[in-house]
Picture 1 (cartoon, rainbow, N blue to C red):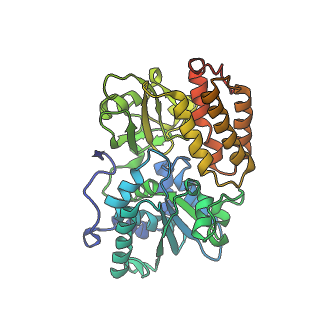
Picture 2 (picture 1 turned 135 degrees about the horizontal axis):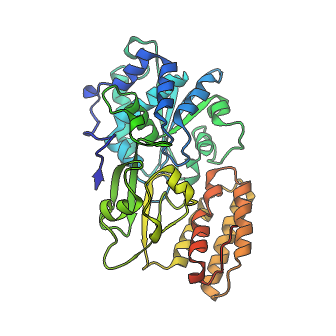
Picture 3 (picture 1 turned 30 degrees about the horizontal axis):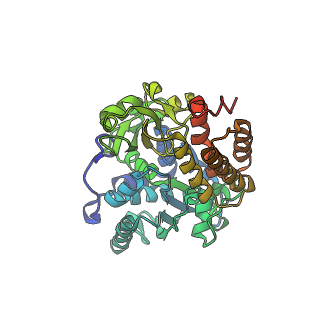
Length: 410
C-alpha cells in the first residue's frame, strides 16, 4: 500500500519526454548561490537518518576547492524495514535524477554517481533506462538547456553490504575497494571520492530538493514545524493491519495516529509492546508513550530518532530475547571489521545473549554497558555507533521482565 498525498504526490515519473525539469531550469535561472540559499531556507534535513541540513552541506561543498567535484546519490537502502527509496527509484526516477542534477549544479560538480543496493534489481533496471534516455535526449553529457552546465552520471550496483549505507564505506565501494569506513576527518566534502570534494545525499533528500526548487510546488518551509520542515516518507511494517509506504507532514500527526490510523492498528487480538521508530538502529518507544507529534525533536527528547523512517510495530506475542538475538546477529554479521571494538563488541553481545537463552543464567548489564560505550566511542561509522541502540533500549525498558536488572546507561 502506498499513500503519497502531500508534498511528493503525483503520478509515476517514468517518461522523460513528458517531464519538464522545472526545478533544474529554475536553478539554472537564479544561479548557484540562490539555489543553495533556497535549500537552506527550506530547512530541509537529510532523510537518510543522520538529519544533517542539506543546504549547509551543499554550501560547504560549494566553498571547497578541488580539481573536480562529485555528487553521489546514496541508494544503498540497507536499514531493515526501509523501502521508501526503492519506491522512489522505481516510480519517481526522474525526480531522483533531477535532484542529482540540482545537487551537482549547486556545488559545481560535473560528475555524479548513483549507488543502488544490489538486491534492487527492478530499481537498477528502471534507473539504467532513465540514464540512457537522458543521454539520448541530451539531458546528460551535454550543454543542459544552453546553460553551460554538463553532468556525467554513472550507476554503480552495490554488493549488499549494510555498512555501505555509511557514506565513506560507499565511496570506497565505488572506487572498487572493500566497503569499509574511513577515518573522519577529512570528511567527504573535503576529501571524498578519488580524494576530491564529494557530496553524498540520500534518494529521498534529493527528491525533496527537486520539490523545493519546483516553482509550482507548495512552499516546503511552510510545511511541518520549526526544526522539522516538510514531509517524510514512512515505511510501516511489523504487526500492523495496513503495512506500507505513507507520507506524513512533520508535527501534524502523532506516532499513535501513525500506528492506529495509518497502520490500521495491531493484527489480531495482540497488544502493542513497542514501536521501533526508524529502523533497528534506533531505540524503541514504549506503547504507552506514542502520543506525541512526529518530529525530529520529539524523538530526540525520548532518546531515540526517526532514523530512516522505518516504523516497525512489535506486539507482545514476540519473545524479547529472540528479537535482541536477531538484531545482535545482524550487526555481528554486517560489521565491516575495520574497528576492533565494533567487530568484537557486537560478537560478544551476541555471545552474552545466546548464553543467557541457552543457560537461563544472569545477564551482566554492567558488561553490556561497558561494551556498548566502547563501541560507540571507538566506531568510525554509524553502524557501530548505533548497533546497540535497540538492544540497550529493550534492556532499559523491559529489564525486569527479562530478569536483566535495571538501566545500563546512566
